[in-house]
Image (cartoon, rainbow, N blue to C red; front, side):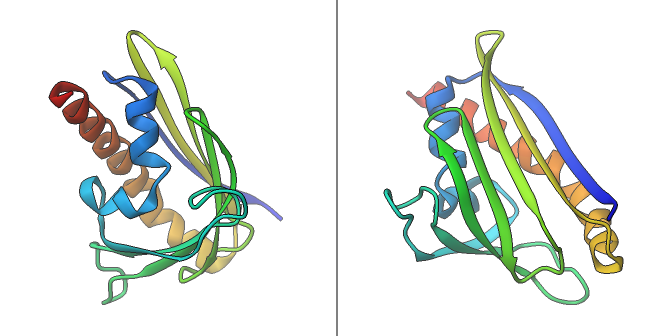
Length: 152
């Protein structure tokens, strides 16, 4: 089956550890991104926010007359460098995999947030939204990291 892909990238003028603290803990997403709330349903297998952790994110954006809730599960986590997760409920995507990659760059951190999923009819509708949201998410994460770096 064909796949859809959305991604965004930006350099944050902040150390990777600062960016990691923001992107590896979904409960902090409402501090800086387009989410009104986040709740963990279960901790990860070896660490609270590591692989196996499941959380629910409520969007601040309206989609089809409501604020959608995405249920996501952490698949992989490499401290300070890489996070992968999948959607297990809430939004109509199949075989969704997102990856957040942090790399040192130009005195800061390059943030790359990318996802792909099956090109079903519902998946195509989700693509229209996520292709707009991903750049906003990365911009907001970078701005929050820079604010934290300045305050430190």
